Amino acid sequence: MSSMKLSSGHTVEAVEDEELEELKRLFPGPITKNSLIRLQPNGWFFPSDYLTFCDKLYNFKLYPTDVIVMTFAKCGTTWTQELVWTLRNNPDLNNPLADKPLGERTPFFEADSLMYSRLVDTMATEGTHPQVELLSQVNPGADWRNGVNWQLAEALQHPRTIKTHLPLELMPNDLLKTTKVVYVCRNPRDCILSWLHHNRLFKGTDFTGTLDQFIDIFIKEKWLHAPYSTHINTAWKVRDNPNLLFLFYEDLKADILGQLKRVDNFLGTNRTEEQLKNVASHSSFPEMRKRSYESEGLKVGEAKDRYNKEVHDKEGGFFRKGVTGDWKEKFTPAQIAIIDQYVQDNLPEIPFKYSV
Ligand code: A3P
Image 1 (cartoon, rainbow, N blue to C red):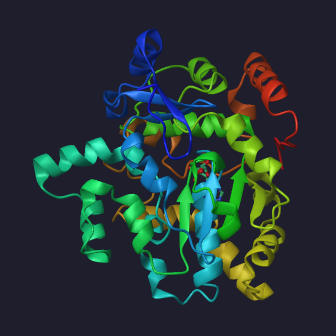
Image 2: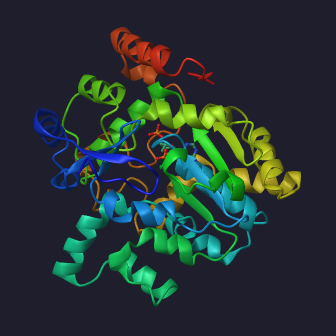
């Protein structure tokens, strides 16, 4: 595997031996039935399904009207997807397409890396899968075996808004020459808590370990989407590029209208104050939470099939708290010190905000 060279220039290493055993123990969900890999340089961490699609992703044709919402996981991706899509397509809140699920309006570019093996199993046993159905509606000629999500992105009506957790390094080479990127980062303490919750909530990962173990995995940068530090540092270095807008989750929380004005300016959407207020209220935490449940025919507070019900009932669903500073309730001083040391060593330039 190590001799394999990808279009991005990275080489591939398998995660092996004790490290693999530990991850399989801590994340017993189906995601670790796959083998796990790292790409070098930087150690980008993926299930091996990534290898089936990475060259297609790297060679994906981008257009100047595309907008990429780029984040490390749990940094405010979903919120920003709705903000950007609504700003571009629904500033008067009268676009019927807004009723479609967010994931359909703003596809998750590399999601096949995370779900393809399970999708293959479902197709083999049940002969159908909602994502395959969707692909056949929007792009009847497409073969799902080539990957569903990047093909959904490809078939999206222009102007397209696309979500990714891929770092700049793994996106098409011409990304910042062609396309606008809205990059969002979140302070590592809240990000870790939210990411821990996500990995416990979803049956796909089913994290069984402790907060200490999760912090250790995070700072050693050995789980999906890692390394958090390089992901953010690379975007920070190009924050003055006219095609990249660097946002902080905490600033969105503190002053959503002010930050929306920056996004409006960056994208050239030229919305009125009234329209920006529409976008902000339509994308608020309670509104998005309510719509997310309703889109699955559930009441807020009812667990979805793919969630661990106990975790959901006790700690909340995907839309958990939506605040800055929850870490104050959850971390010990020793845990904060470990994370701060990681930040000092790896992210010295980033002006993180830990409360708003
Ligand atoms: P918490 O787990 O801290 O509540 P991502 O979309 O990148 O996966 O990030 C998810 C985090 O953003 C979760 O954080 C979620 O609750 C929060 N979030 C989602 N929608 C939001 C919104 N409209 N406003 C504020 N936070 C939101």
